[in-house]
Image (cartoon, rainbow, N blue to C red; front, side):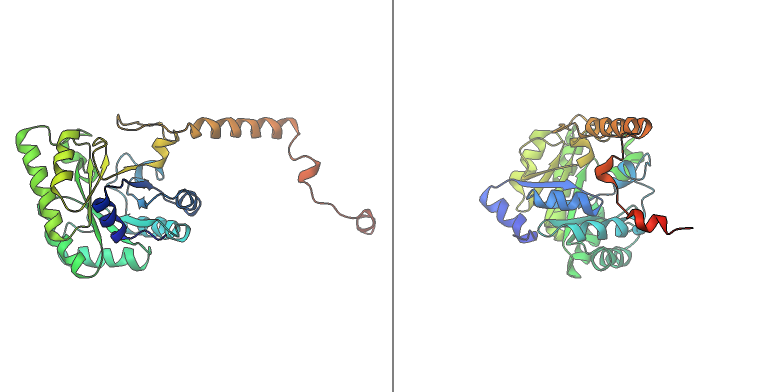
Length: 275
């Protein structure tokens, strides 16, 4: 069954947990979709795990459109949410609506996600009024990593916790259909989840949220540059891949691959006629 923003609302009402994973290409999206995951996030985390950047700041609209379109072609039932990259929405409501529209038209997104609270509510409202579903993102917002001074848990002081709670109320009021809570204390995430009518999607926010999201390379052990505390490795696919690559190298070097069963044949009569 096709997942939509209505799926998120109904899951919240029924108390059913939502599942979300990142993907950046057709093949991975297809596998995630076939597993029945509710939503696929084409995150600007592709800057780290796909393009090799140190952060998400350098990711462009063209990057998001390119990878978003690939994912959309592979996802038949999952709701595809595409991140709005740095400076594609912060500059003005007009820019935000235009760029969100590009992600819907060119990347075939089912919704867009942007970071920030009260300060981006005019953008959320404008995008929603244009008929585009918006997922908000609070807590540790990677595009603001330089302002935070690094990857740090957010909302631990009274002032910070109060701001996060007020921001959550604000993005809901602006029209967001869901909000990601990243690196937020579990008890605070619980308070936000219970207060909001929209779904909360946690990443490093405990198991009290309405759903969870992880970067698939993290949960499969494929990205070793940095592993956050909140990541659980559900399989060590990275090691399996390296073993396969080494095995391939060995067989090519010793001449056992390709074997006869991997070859195409030609008639000796044809060869005898060559000159």
